[in-house]
Structures are given as structure tokens and as C-alpha cells.
Amino acid sequence: MKTHITHLRFGGDNCFVIEKDGHAVLVDTGRKATRERLLSALRPWNIKLILLTHGHFDHAYNAAFLAREFGAVVALHEADAALVRDNRIHTIDSRGLLGYFIKKASLANINRTHIEPFVPAFYLRGGQDLGCFGIDAQIIELPGHTAGSVGIIVGKKCIVGDTLMNMGGISRARIAEDFRAVSRSVESLKRTGAEVFYPGHGGPVSRKQLLKLFV
Ligand SMILES: [Zn+2]
Ligand SMILES: [Zn+2]
Image (spheres, rainbow, N blue to C red):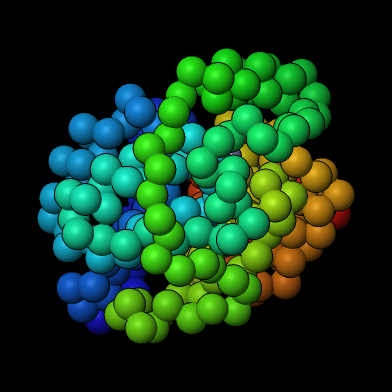
């Protein structure tokens, strides 16, 4: 069987299951309100690894809980290891009116959300191959939205976290720790050869849409 991605949507938030031959890896864990729906959606799979595209609450909130439920381990990039313990420690900038509102809503959430701590089993880094977890996938570093943002390349598909957004139109990250780094990461995405990109929020983005948007 080929490695397959299942896209799980909870309102505007996305989680993904990457599976091959009974091996399953969860990418991102949603926010507080998503917990029960995500847990029941995940019942068909035997999740052994939980990857976080970055340390924000709307991706990391349920990591510790799901790790316990499934007996899974959690991994993220080392540059987000402190951020995931406290989302308030890094400053976020915004771009555009929508970015302004996203930042405002995010900061309000950050201030009232406590992410249950967990100890990462290992750290993700660029070029890392996930073959030892039974799936054909590689990690790509995408710093900018957060310093430790990563994507996961699965054949011609790529999960990109919040480096891209598809809410109110396709765009690069509308909030970020470093927008210049976001631009470089979008360039890295173009070089992957992937045909479909899955953002952390909203529907998938085709390669054609990505190239058209950012030339
Ligand atoms: Zn984020
Ligand atoms: Zn997000």
C-alpha cells in the first residue's frame, strides 16, 4: 500500500493521519474544543507517533492527552520546544486586516489556554525520514510562522502547518514570528516538487495556486 493522507477538518482547523500498512502517524492535535471529535475520528487508527507542525495551542493542545490515549510519542522541532510550554514567550506580527484580527483572536486564546506539558520523544529536523515509523514521509523545516515550524512531505503532497493559510483566500502565514523567514519557507515549498499543499487552516492548495499567488 502507498502512504496515504487522511485530512480531518474541525471547522477551520486541520489534523492529518498519515498511514501505510497499518502504521499511522497523526499530524497536529487541534484546540481544546476539538478534543472529543478528534478522539472519536481517530478511533480507526493505531496512532504511534504524533507530529506537531509547530507549538501553537491550536495544533498542540491535545498532544499530551492523545499520547496517553494511544500510547503514542510526540515530536516537534526543538526551536518550538519552549514555545509549546508557553505560547506567550514569542512575539507575533501580523499582515493585513485579516492578520490583525487573527492575531487579536490568537492572543486572547493564548492568554486563556494552558497547553498540558509533555516531553517530546525526539526532535524533528529537516531531511529526517519517518520510515522507521512505517510511513514514507520526510520532514522539511519551514521557519517563520514560528521558529520551529515544519512540514511533512508525503510523495507529491506536503502538510505545511501555518506557513500557508486558506481562510478567506489562499495566502502565506498572516501572523508570524518572522515574515522574511516565512517568505524563504514558501520558496522552499515551491522547490519540493509537491503538487498539493495542506495548510493548518482551510482547504488544500494546488501547486498552480501556490505559484500563481506568490510570483
Ligand atoms: Zn500557528
Ligand atoms: Zn494554526
